[in-house]
Image (cartoon, rainbow, N blue to C red; front, side, top):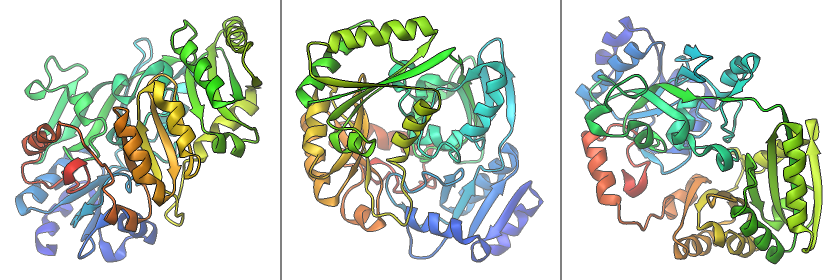
Amino acid sequence: MTIQLSSLLDTDAEIIPWEKVDYSWIDIVEQATLSDTPPSYLIYPQTQDALAKVVEYANKLQWSILPCGNGSKLNWGGLVKNPQLVISTQHLNRIIDHAVGDLTVTVEAGVTLQQLQTLLQPHSQFLPLDPAYPDTATLGGIMATGDTGSWRQRYGGVRDMVLGLSFIRFDGKIAKGGGRVVKNVAGYDMMRLFTGSYGTLGIITQITFRLYPIHEASQTLLMTGKPDDISILAQTLRQSGITPTAAEILSSSLVQSLGEDGMGLMLRFQSIPESITEQIRQVKKIAQPLDFKSTIYADLDEISIWSQLQKSFNTSNADAKIVCKVGILPSSSIELLTKLEPFGLGMVNLGSGIGKLIIRKEGIEKMRSLCQNHQGYLSILESPKSIKQTIDPWGYNGNALDMMQKLKQKFDPNHLFSPNRFVGKI
Protein backbone atom coordinates (compact mmCIF):
# COMPACT_ATOMS: atom_id res chain seq x y z
CA MET A 1 0.00 0.00 0.00
CA THR A 2 2.88 2.40 0.71
CA ILE A 3 3.98 2.50 -2.96
CA GLN A 4 0.52 3.35 -4.29
CA LEU A 5 -0.24 5.89 -1.57
CA SER A 6 2.94 7.85 -2.27
CA SER A 7 1.29 9.12 -5.44
CA LEU A 8 -1.23 10.92 -3.22
CA LEU A 9 1.44 13.00 -1.54
CA ASP A 10 1.06 15.76 -4.14
CA THR A 11 -2.52 16.30 -2.96
CA ASP A 12 -3.45 18.81 -0.28
CA ALA A 13 -3.77 16.15 2.42
CA GLU A 14 -1.80 15.15 5.49
CA ILE A 15 -1.14 11.39 5.37
CA ILE A 16 0.07 9.78 8.60
CA PRO A 17 1.18 6.13 8.80
CA TRP A 18 -0.80 4.40 11.53
CA GLU A 19 2.28 3.60 13.61
CA LYS A 20 2.87 7.37 13.94
CA VAL A 21 -0.72 8.29 14.79
CA ASP A 22 -1.40 9.91 18.17
CA TYR A 23 -2.55 7.40 20.82
CA SER A 24 -5.87 9.21 21.35
CA TRP A 25 -6.85 8.40 17.76
CA ILE A 26 -5.67 4.81 18.10
CA ASP A 27 -7.92 4.38 21.14
CA ILE A 28 -10.95 5.98 19.46
CA VAL A 29 -10.62 3.81 16.36
CA GLU A 30 -9.96 0.65 18.39
CA GLN A 31 -13.29 1.13 20.21
CA ALA A 32 -15.14 1.63 16.90
CA THR A 33 -13.74 -1.22 14.82
CA LEU A 34 -13.50 -4.97 14.53
CA SER A 35 -10.20 -5.55 12.76
CA ASP A 36 -7.67 -8.29 12.17
CA THR A 37 -5.04 -5.60 11.64
CA PRO A 38 -5.01 -1.86 12.42
CA PRO A 39 -5.67 0.70 9.66
CA SER A 40 -2.71 1.72 7.53
CA TYR A 41 -3.16 5.49 7.48
CA LEU A 42 -4.93 8.43 9.09
CA ILE A 43 -5.59 11.07 6.43
CA TYR A 44 -6.51 14.73 6.92
CA PRO A 45 -7.61 16.23 3.58
CA GLN A 46 -7.25 20.02 3.53
CA THR A 47 -9.74 20.55 0.70
CA GLN A 48 -12.79 18.88 -0.81
CA ASP A 49 -10.84 18.14 -3.98
CA ALA A 50 -8.04 16.46 -2.02
CA LEU A 51 -10.59 14.28 -0.23
CA ALA A 52 -12.15 13.36 -3.57
CA LYS A 53 -8.78 12.24 -4.90
CA VAL A 54 -8.07 10.10 -1.82
CA VAL A 55 -11.45 8.36 -2.17
CA GLU A 56 -10.88 7.85 -5.90
CA TYR A 57 -7.60 6.05 -5.17
CA ALA A 58 -9.13 4.03 -2.36
CA ASN A 59 -11.90 2.86 -4.66
CA LYS A 60 -9.48 1.81 -7.39
CA LEU A 61 -7.44 -0.21 -4.91
CA GLN A 62 -10.47 -1.44 -2.90
CA TRP A 63 -9.31 0.06 0.41
CA SER A 64 -12.12 0.29 2.95
CA ILE A 65 -12.63 3.71 4.56
CA LEU A 66 -13.72 4.86 8.01
CA PRO A 67 -14.85 8.51 7.63
CA CYS A 68 -14.99 10.74 10.71
CA GLY A 69 -14.70 14.30 11.99
CA ASN A 70 -13.17 14.64 15.44
CA GLY A 71 -14.21 11.11 16.40
CA SER A 72 -16.58 12.08 19.23
CA LYS A 73 -19.27 9.66 17.96
CA LEU A 74 -17.11 7.24 16.02
CA ASN A 75 -18.03 4.40 18.38
CA TRP A 76 -21.77 4.89 17.83
CA GLY A 77 -23.56 2.14 15.91
CA GLY A 78 -21.99 -1.10 14.74
CA LEU A 79 -18.30 -2.00 14.77
CA VAL A 80 -16.65 -1.15 11.44
CA LYS A 81 -14.93 -4.15 9.89
CA ASN A 82 -11.27 -3.89 8.86
CA PRO A 83 -10.99 -0.24 7.76
CA GLN A 84 -7.73 0.41 5.92
CA LEU A 85 -7.97 4.20 5.83
CA VAL A 86 -9.29 6.53 8.52
CA ILE A 87 -10.21 9.82 6.85
CA SER A 88 -10.92 12.80 9.10
CA THR A 89 -12.67 15.96 7.87
CA GLN A 90 -11.20 17.86 10.82
CA HIS A 91 -9.27 20.24 8.52
CA LEU A 92 -12.27 20.91 6.29
CA ASN A 93 -13.27 23.65 8.71
CA ARG A 94 -14.16 26.70 6.65
CA ILE A 95 -17.33 28.79 6.61
CA ILE A 96 -18.28 28.89 2.93
CA ASP A 97 -21.12 31.42 3.08
CA HIS A 98 -23.30 33.07 5.72
CA ALA A 99 -26.36 34.74 4.22
CA VAL A 100 -27.41 36.73 7.28
CA GLY A 101 -30.59 38.12 5.73
CA ASP A 102 -31.68 34.72 4.42
CA LEU A 103 -30.92 32.93 7.71
CA THR A 104 -28.74 30.30 6.02
CA VAL A 105 -25.13 29.22 6.37
CA THR A 106 -22.95 26.88 4.32
CA VAL A 107 -20.06 25.23 6.14
CA GLU A 108 -17.50 22.52 5.58
CA ALA A 109 -18.16 19.28 7.43
CA GLY A 110 -15.26 19.67 9.87
CA VAL A 111 -16.58 22.87 11.45
CA THR A 112 -17.66 22.18 15.03
CA LEU A 113 -21.05 23.21 16.35
CA GLN A 114 -19.36 25.41 18.94
CA GLN A 115 -17.36 27.23 16.25
CA LEU A 116 -20.50 27.88 14.22
CA GLN A 117 -22.53 29.14 17.19
CA THR A 118 -19.69 31.53 18.09
CA LEU A 119 -19.73 32.89 14.53
CA LEU A 120 -23.51 33.29 14.50
CA GLN A 121 -23.92 34.88 17.93
CA PRO A 122 -22.97 38.48 16.92
CA HIS A 123 -25.71 38.27 14.29
CA SER A 124 -28.28 37.11 16.89
CA GLN A 125 -28.67 33.80 15.06
CA PHE A 126 -28.12 30.17 16.03
CA LEU A 127 -28.42 26.60 14.80
CA PRO A 128 -30.88 24.78 17.12
CA LEU A 129 -28.93 21.57 17.65
CA ASP A 130 -28.09 20.21 21.08
CA PRO A 131 -26.05 17.05 20.37
CA ALA A 132 -23.76 14.97 22.54
CA TYR A 133 -20.24 16.40 22.95
CA PRO A 134 -21.14 19.83 21.48
CA ASP A 135 -17.66 21.28 22.07
CA THR A 136 -15.96 18.79 19.74
CA ALA A 137 -18.77 17.40 17.56
CA THR A 138 -18.38 18.39 13.92
CA LEU A 139 -21.39 19.34 11.85
CA GLY A 140 -20.65 16.52 9.42
CA GLY A 141 -20.62 14.03 12.29
CA ILE A 142 -23.81 15.47 13.77
CA MET A 143 -25.57 15.05 10.42
CA ALA A 144 -24.12 11.57 9.84
CA THR A 145 -25.44 10.37 13.22
CA GLY A 146 -28.67 12.39 13.16
CA ASP A 147 -27.87 13.68 16.65
CA THR A 148 -30.35 16.51 17.29
CA GLY A 149 -30.89 16.88 21.05
CA SER A 150 -33.63 18.52 23.09
CA TRP A 151 -34.47 21.35 20.67
CA ARG A 152 -36.18 18.72 18.51
CA GLN A 153 -39.44 19.65 20.28
CA ARG A 154 -39.66 23.02 18.51
CA TYR A 155 -37.33 22.81 15.51
CA GLY A 156 -37.47 19.17 14.41
CA GLY A 157 -34.52 16.91 13.66
CA VAL A 158 -31.22 17.54 11.90
CA ARG A 159 -32.73 16.65 8.55
CA ASP A 160 -35.32 19.42 8.96
CA MET A 161 -32.55 22.04 9.20
CA VAL A 162 -30.40 20.85 6.27
CA LEU A 163 -31.13 22.67 3.02
CA GLY A 164 -28.30 21.22 0.96
CA LEU A 165 -25.09 19.22 1.05
CA SER A 166 -22.06 18.14 -0.94
CA PHE A 167 -20.46 14.73 -0.54
CA ILE A 168 -17.82 12.49 -2.06
CA ARG A 169 -19.15 9.45 -3.88
CA PHE A 170 -17.51 6.03 -3.82
CA ASP A 171 -15.68 6.81 -7.08
CA GLY A 172 -14.25 10.12 -5.86
CA LYS A 173 -16.76 12.29 -7.72
CA ILE A 174 -18.21 15.31 -5.89
CA ALA A 175 -22.02 15.24 -5.75
CA LYS A 176 -24.54 17.75 -4.45
CA GLY A 177 -28.12 17.76 -3.29
CA GLY A 178 -30.61 20.46 -2.31
CA GLY A 179 -29.58 24.04 -1.67
CA ARG A 180 -29.09 25.95 -4.91
CA VAL A 181 -29.23 22.73 -6.92
CA VAL A 182 -32.38 22.54 -9.03
CA LYS A 183 -32.72 18.77 -8.82
CA ASN A 184 -31.44 16.24 -6.32
CA VAL A 185 -28.96 13.60 -7.48
CA ALA A 186 -30.80 10.71 -9.15
CA GLY A 187 -34.07 12.01 -7.71
CA TYR A 188 -33.16 11.17 -4.09
CA ASP A 189 -33.77 13.53 -1.17
CA MET A 190 -30.08 13.59 -0.31
CA MET A 191 -30.47 15.63 2.89
CA ARG A 192 -32.78 13.09 4.49
CA LEU A 193 -30.89 10.12 3.06
CA PHE A 194 -27.53 11.18 4.48
CA THR A 195 -28.90 12.23 7.89
CA GLY A 196 -28.27 9.29 10.18
CA SER A 197 -26.44 7.27 7.50
CA TYR A 198 -23.36 6.86 9.75
CA GLY A 199 -20.86 7.44 6.96
CA THR A 200 -21.99 4.42 4.95
CA LEU A 201 -23.16 6.18 1.75
CA GLY A 202 -20.41 8.73 1.14
CA ILE A 203 -18.35 11.39 2.93
CA ILE A 204 -20.17 14.65 3.67
CA THR A 205 -17.99 17.67 2.81
CA GLN A 206 -20.28 20.72 2.92
CA ILE A 207 -23.69 21.40 4.48
CA THR A 208 -26.14 24.29 4.12
CA PHE A 209 -28.27 24.85 7.23
CA ARG A 210 -31.40 26.84 7.97
CA LEU A 211 -30.77 29.22 10.91
CA TYR A 212 -33.05 30.84 13.49
CA PRO A 213 -33.01 34.12 15.45
CA ILE A 214 -31.75 33.97 19.03
CA HIS A 215 -34.65 34.45 21.44
CA GLU A 216 -34.90 37.51 23.62
CA ALA A 217 -35.37 35.53 26.84
CA SER A 218 -35.33 31.96 28.14
CA GLN A 219 -36.58 30.06 31.20
CA THR A 220 -36.95 26.39 32.09
CA LEU A 221 -39.73 24.87 34.17
CA LEU A 222 -39.09 21.52 35.87
CA MET A 223 -42.22 19.73 37.08
CA THR A 224 -41.66 16.68 39.29
CA GLY A 225 -44.23 14.24 40.59
CA LYS A 226 -45.74 10.77 40.27
CA PRO A 227 -45.65 8.94 36.91
CA ASP A 228 -49.45 8.97 36.58
CA ASP A 229 -49.56 12.74 37.09
CA ILE A 230 -46.68 13.28 34.66
CA SER A 231 -48.58 11.17 32.11
CA ILE A 232 -51.72 13.31 32.45
CA LEU A 233 -49.76 16.56 32.20
CA ALA A 234 -47.74 15.33 29.22
CA GLN A 235 -50.81 14.24 27.28
CA THR A 236 -52.57 17.55 27.99
CA LEU A 237 -49.55 19.54 26.82
CA ARG A 238 -49.31 17.54 23.58
CA GLN A 239 -52.86 18.60 22.75
CA SER A 240 -52.45 22.22 23.85
CA GLY A 241 -51.17 25.33 22.10
CA ILE A 242 -48.25 25.66 24.52
CA THR A 243 -44.97 25.78 22.58
CA PRO A 244 -41.81 24.94 24.54
CA THR A 245 -38.61 24.89 22.49
CA ALA A 246 -37.41 21.84 24.44
CA ALA A 247 -39.49 19.31 26.36
CA GLU A 248 -38.17 16.14 27.97
CA ILE A 249 -39.76 13.54 30.22
CA LEU A 250 -37.15 12.43 32.78
CA SER A 251 -36.95 9.13 34.64
CA SER A 252 -36.97 9.26 38.44
CA SER A 253 -33.31 8.24 38.59
CA LEU A 254 -32.35 11.06 36.25
CA VAL A 255 -34.38 13.57 38.26
CA GLN A 256 -32.63 12.35 41.40
CA SER A 257 -29.24 13.03 39.78
CA LEU A 258 -30.41 16.63 39.32
CA GLY A 259 -31.18 16.91 43.03
CA GLU A 260 -34.98 16.48 42.90
CA ASP A 261 -37.45 13.64 43.55
CA GLY A 262 -40.05 11.89 41.41
CA MET A 263 -40.42 11.60 37.66
CA GLY A 264 -39.88 14.87 35.80
CA LEU A 265 -41.09 16.96 32.90
CA MET A 266 -38.59 19.64 31.86
CA LEU A 267 -39.89 22.43 29.61
CA ARG A 268 -37.82 25.21 28.09
CA PHE A 269 -39.57 28.39 26.95
CA GLN A 270 -37.74 30.87 24.73
CA SER A 271 -39.49 33.97 23.44
CA ILE A 272 -40.24 37.49 24.66
CA PRO A 273 -40.48 37.65 28.49
CA GLU A 274 -44.25 38.18 28.49
CA SER A 275 -44.86 35.05 26.42
CA ILE A 276 -42.63 32.95 28.67
CA THR A 277 -44.43 34.15 31.79
CA GLU A 278 -47.83 33.39 30.27
CA GLN A 279 -46.89 29.91 29.05
CA ILE A 280 -45.42 28.93 32.42
CA ARG A 281 -48.62 30.22 34.06
CA GLN A 282 -50.69 28.05 31.74
CA VAL A 283 -48.63 24.93 32.51
CA LYS A 284 -48.97 25.51 36.24
CA LYS A 285 -52.71 26.01 35.84
CA ILE A 286 -53.04 22.68 34.00
CA ALA A 287 -50.96 20.99 36.70
CA GLN A 288 -52.81 22.60 39.62
CA PRO A 289 -55.26 19.71 40.27
CA LEU A 290 -52.33 17.28 40.25
CA ASP A 291 -49.56 16.71 42.77
CA PHE A 292 -46.46 18.51 41.44
CA LYS A 293 -43.43 20.38 42.64
CA SER A 294 -42.30 23.08 40.20
CA THR A 295 -38.93 24.80 39.90
CA ILE A 296 -38.02 27.61 37.50
CA TYR A 297 -34.48 28.00 36.18
CA ALA A 298 -33.19 31.15 34.50
CA ASP A 299 -29.89 32.67 33.38
CA LEU A 300 -26.82 30.69 34.50
CA ASP A 301 -28.95 28.22 36.50
CA GLU A 302 -30.84 27.32 33.33
CA ILE A 303 -27.67 26.87 31.30
CA SER A 304 -26.25 24.72 34.09
CA ILE A 305 -29.20 22.33 34.41
CA TRP A 306 -29.40 21.67 30.66
CA SER A 307 -25.65 21.12 30.55
CA GLN A 308 -25.92 18.75 33.51
CA LEU A 309 -28.72 16.85 31.79
CA GLN A 310 -26.71 16.49 28.61
CA LYS A 311 -23.57 15.36 30.42
CA SER A 312 -25.56 12.61 32.14
CA PHE A 313 -25.48 10.77 28.81
CA ASN A 314 -21.91 11.54 27.82
CA THR A 315 -19.38 8.83 28.47
CA SER A 316 -15.80 7.93 27.65
CA ASN A 317 -13.99 4.82 26.52
CA ALA A 318 -12.98 4.21 30.12
CA ASP A 319 -16.62 4.03 31.24
CA ALA A 320 -18.66 0.85 31.27
CA LYS A 321 -21.84 2.81 30.48
CA ILE A 322 -24.19 1.64 27.76
CA VAL A 323 -25.89 4.58 26.05
CA CYS A 324 -28.92 3.77 23.90
CA LYS A 325 -31.19 5.74 21.61
CA VAL A 326 -34.88 4.89 21.72
CA GLY A 327 -37.94 5.77 19.71
CA ILE A 328 -41.39 4.94 21.02
CA LEU A 329 -44.96 6.16 20.73
CA PRO A 330 -45.01 9.35 22.86
CA SER A 331 -47.99 8.01 24.80
CA SER A 332 -45.87 5.01 25.89
CA SER A 333 -42.88 7.01 27.14
CA ILE A 334 -44.01 7.00 30.79
CA GLU A 335 -44.29 3.20 30.79
CA LEU A 336 -40.82 2.91 29.24
CA LEU A 337 -39.17 5.21 31.78
CA THR A 338 -40.97 3.53 34.69
CA LYS A 339 -39.89 0.03 33.65
CA LEU A 340 -36.37 1.32 32.99
CA GLU A 341 -35.80 2.17 36.67
CA PRO A 342 -34.27 -1.19 37.75
CA PHE A 343 -31.76 -0.96 34.89
CA GLY A 344 -30.77 2.68 34.54
CA LEU A 345 -32.00 6.18 33.74
CA GLY A 346 -33.29 8.03 30.71
CA MET A 347 -35.26 10.80 29.08
CA VAL A 348 -37.73 10.90 26.19
CA ASN A 349 -38.81 13.87 24.09
CA LEU A 350 -42.39 14.90 24.86
CA GLY A 351 -43.52 15.30 21.26
CA SER A 352 -41.52 12.79 19.22
CA GLY A 353 -40.95 9.90 21.65
CA ILE A 354 -37.22 9.89 20.78
CA GLY A 355 -34.88 9.64 23.74
CA LYS A 356 -31.70 8.37 25.34
CA LEU A 357 -31.09 5.79 28.04
CA ILE A 358 -28.16 4.80 30.21
CA ILE A 359 -28.75 1.11 30.82
CA ARG A 360 -27.10 -1.97 32.24
CA LYS A 361 -26.51 -4.96 29.97
CA GLU A 362 -29.24 -7.10 31.51
CA GLY A 363 -31.86 -4.48 30.66
CA ILE A 364 -31.10 -4.07 26.96
CA GLU A 365 -33.27 -6.86 25.56
CA LYS A 366 -36.13 -6.11 27.98
CA MET A 367 -36.23 -2.43 27.01
CA ARG A 368 -35.76 -3.26 23.32
CA SER A 369 -38.75 -5.62 23.42
CA LEU A 370 -40.86 -3.01 25.18
CA CYS A 371 -39.99 -0.40 22.54
CA GLN A 372 -40.70 -2.79 19.67
CA ASN A 373 -44.02 -3.79 21.21
CA HIS A 374 -44.96 -0.09 21.11
CA GLN A 375 -43.96 0.43 17.45
CA GLY A 376 -40.52 1.69 18.42
CA TYR A 377 -36.86 0.74 18.57
CA LEU A 378 -33.79 0.68 20.78
CA SER A 379 -30.31 1.00 19.30
CA ILE A 380 -27.00 0.99 21.14
CA LEU A 381 -24.94 4.14 20.63
CA GLU A 382 -22.02 3.77 23.02
CA SER A 383 -20.96 0.72 25.00
CA PRO A 384 -17.93 -1.38 25.83
CA LYS A 385 -16.80 -3.08 22.64
CA SER A 386 -17.62 -6.52 24.06
CA ILE A 387 -21.32 -5.60 24.29
CA LYS A 388 -21.57 -4.89 20.56
CA GLN A 389 -19.81 -8.16 19.81
CA THR A 390 -22.57 -10.09 21.60
CA ILE A 391 -25.69 -7.92 21.13
CA ASP A 392 -26.81 -6.43 17.80
CA PRO A 393 -26.42 -2.65 18.24
CA TRP A 394 -29.40 -1.95 16.00
CA GLY A 395 -31.85 -4.77 16.75
CA TYR A 396 -33.81 -3.79 13.67
CA ASN A 397 -37.06 -5.69 13.09
CA GLY A 398 -38.70 -3.47 10.47
CA ASN A 399 -39.46 -4.23 6.83
CA ALA A 400 -37.11 -1.75 5.11
CA LEU A 401 -33.83 -3.69 5.26
CA ASP A 402 -34.05 -4.71 1.61
CA MET A 403 -34.48 -1.07 0.59
CA MET A 404 -31.52 -0.04 2.76
CA GLN A 405 -29.34 -2.69 1.14
CA LYS A 406 -30.34 -1.51 -2.34
CA LEU A 407 -29.49 2.09 -1.43
CA LYS A 408 -26.11 0.97 -0.09
CA GLN A 409 -25.45 -0.90 -3.31
CA LYS A 410 -26.43 2.16 -5.34
CA PHE A 411 -24.26 4.63 -3.42
CA ASP A 412 -21.37 2.35 -2.39
CA PRO A 413 -21.32 -0.72 -4.67
CA ASN A 414 -17.90 -1.84 -3.43
CA HIS A 415 -18.89 -1.47 0.24
CA LEU A 416 -15.90 0.70 1.07
CA PHE A 417 -17.54 3.26 3.38
CA SER A 418 -17.84 2.21 7.05
CA PRO A 419 -18.49 -1.48 6.29
CA ASN A 420 -20.62 -3.24 8.92
CA ARG A 421 -21.53 -0.07 10.84
CA PHE A 422 -25.19 0.31 9.91
CA VAL A 423 -28.38 -1.75 10.24
CA GLY A 424 -28.03 -5.30 8.93
CA LYS A 425 -24.21 -4.93 8.86
CA ILE A 426 -24.51 -2.57 5.90
